[in-house]
Length: 442
Ligand SMILES: [Zn+2]
Image (cartoon, rainbow, N blue to C red; front, side, top):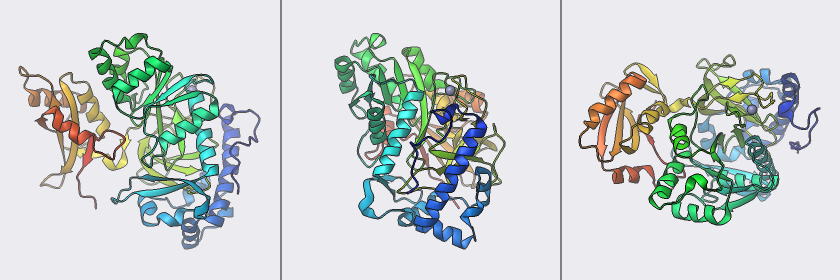
C-alpha cells in the first residue's frame, strides 16, 4: 500500500510553502504511486488501461495525464463496485453521494482513508486560522451517509481543537449552545447564518457580542470571481462582523479547498489531490481561464479516482498568495457544468440568478427551475416566496432586476413562502434545494 500522505519528503514541513517546481516534482512522484496502485488494485481502471492500451509506466508527470481518459460521474454509478480497491472487510465507513442517474453512488473509506480525511481537514482548518484550543460548533449533519460532518470531526480532533456537534438547523439549540459553550468558530451552510441572525433578532440575543469570531462556510460560495464578497457574503457581513471563510470540497475529491485569511481563493493541498482545469475541447485551459475541475486523488486506498470530472466550473490562480503559500488556489465556483443555462442566447449559471434574488429585500425564499421550452431551448422559472410587498409589482420589479444584472429575465411566479420552504427542504437533503433541473438531457 502506497499511502504515505503524512510522510513529508520535501524541504519545507508544509509542501504548500515549497516552490512551484518542488510541488510539481512532488506531485509527479505521488501520481506515479497512485497509478501503480490503480493498476494493481482497481478493477475499473485495470479495464480502462487495458481497453486503451495504456502502460501506466509511461505516465510520468501531471502533464502526461492528458493522455488518459476521463472518469465520469456516470462511470461511478454504473460500475460502482469496480472502483473499490480493497476487500469489504477493510472498509470502516460507508458513504453515499447522489448520482446523476437517480440512485446513489456508494463510497467505502478504509481506516487509512479516514486518517487522510482527518489530515485534509486539519490542514484546511489551519489554513483558515483555527488553532489548537479553539472551539468549533458544527452545524452540519454527522450521519445520514454523508462524509463531510465526519471528516470535520476527525480533522478538528486531529488538530487539537474542540468540537460541539449540534447538527444542522434548529436556531434555538444553536444559540443555546453558543451561549453555553462559547465557540469561536462555527461551521455551516452560509445561508443558515441569515436564519440564525433572524432568530437572534427576534429573541433579543446579542449575537454581535457573542463568542463567535469566525464562520467557515460549506456548500455555498461567499465570494465573486474577484474575491469580493458576493451578495450572500455581504448580507452576512452587514449583519454580523465575523471573519468569513469559504470552502469547496466533495466526497469524490476527499479533499477541501480552503481559504486563508486573505480570502482570495481556496488553497489546494497538493499532497491530497491533483487538479486539472479542462476546457470545452477536453484539453487543459491556460491558468486563469474557466473550465471544468478534473481531479485525481492521491493517497486514497478505498476508492481512488483518476481524472474524475467534477462538473464544477472554476479557474486556477497560480501566483503566490499573500499568506506565503505557493500551492495554487481555485476561484469561487462559477457554476455547475450541467447547470449551465442558455437563456435567450445568454450563458448563465444558477449562482448568478441566486445573487439577484438574494439581494432583493422582499424575497423571503425561492427556487429556480429550469426546463425545456416548447421550442426546445432552456426556460427558467423563478418561484419566489414574497414578504408583504403589496405596493410593488413583484413580477415586473424582479424582471427589471434580472435584466439589469444578467441581461435576460426568467419567468417569475409568486408563491406563499411556506410553499417554497417545502420545496427548499426535502427530507433527505443536507443543503437547501434552490435549483431544480427538469431539462431532458441527451
Ligand atoms: Zn493564502
